[in-house]
Image (cartoon, rainbow, N blue to C red; front, side, top):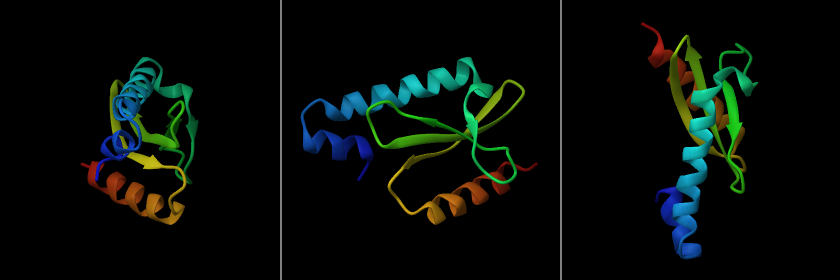
Length: 94
């Protein structure tokens, strides 16, 4: 189940609010990709936390290109996030 669907099942309109929060966060990343904290050992991955929802966008960028690696629930096991980020970074290599 998609997160937006889960939120919509909890309360009418909440799924749309989640999607708007994710969109605003991605807009902020696009405007200032260097603004958000680096979070992994290689210092390539950054995290932008959504307002009102326990989710974060994990991304990396190279010049003007931004790569969204994960939209991750912050209460999930961090080990699964690390695995997901490592795999995503491997897939980005030329």
